[in-house]
Image 1: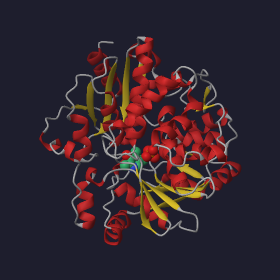
Image 2 (image 1 turned 30 degrees about the vertical axis):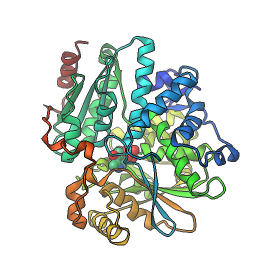
Image 3 (image 1 turned 90 degrees about the horizontal axis):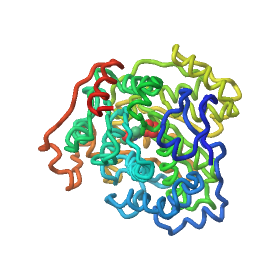
Image 4 (image 1 turned 90 degrees about the vertical axis):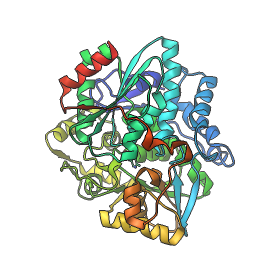
Length: 461
Ligand SMILES: *Cc1c(COP(=O)(O)O)cnc(C)c1O
């Protein structure tokens, strides 16, 4: 399996190379040259299998010979062994025909663990064979950072630096990043918002001298291996509800478009998903784009669902690439226009997108009211991101079963949850001393040179 860049100018890579690289050298994102498909019989065969067995079947065709069958099987087994639920991604029911896919039973209580735990093991396997050291730098709106730190802490051949927007993550999220004691973990609080963190990260990738000197690797959702790991739970959930014989619909609380893009890949592979519903909070650029065809940046407003406070949704570039018939030059031009403020999607491309996706937005009041209503009607406490999804899903219910992705555990956002429904969501016992652990964090300016100097100094590379 070969991987190509959405901007058409970067070297073609293997799965392992694309995983270790992250962002392509032309600024684009890696995608498989072709998406392998599964037959209805193969999908039907997933019924009754474990999460790990389905994960192996779904991912194997994308991965190629750099990982042997045994290595891949072991990485998958270790990745999910630390989850608190044997089903890994269990389904709960909210209302007739409306289900919640609980993706928060991993070590850091958000869906990011599904991908990050797996790539932690894939990276380790690959780097040991190559006797190579790398520097991971990640930008986070809260959950990616803690998941990455949890996956890479203590590994010999990896230093991990996480940029998060100072003052804009929840206390639980911050403490998950600042309390690990391993020397290879570096939490950096940047003076700016998430888009600033993501922009500085992209600058580092585009500064080839720095990139090569420190062995820069990216684990943001631009990393194809992360998207691939997330494709799996679309299959397990859909098959639980009768796929491939019965179609399903998903609603995905969306920020950087990684999770919903994984759903798009599942659909491309042959899973009968009749609609993928993009749910945004009031930072609604994706919803507006789908409605109007114009992708125009506005400022980011902090909300009670901070992991979705994003205006530049990196992974949207991947679906644009398909919408434009895989013309890298067209995508490159649109991304240039975006840097200057925005772009307009062609008629053909917007029709392509509207054929797959629907969208909606939840205001802060609607998000709080949904947390309360779900508590009142089901006794389930849901997190604010999940509530955005549930609200938007309710506007898209029909005869096809709807599955809303529950992206984080409510205990990660205790204040917002308590304000909305008066309930306290408890952290799992293994994390009950989180507020007593010592924090270790470096405040950094929104400045590329300062960041690169810090990374050179800390790694000695
Ligand atoms: C990251 C995150 C999202 C958004 O996911 P994307 O892949 O960036 O679209 C939604 N909810 C939670 C809790 C998250 O951590």
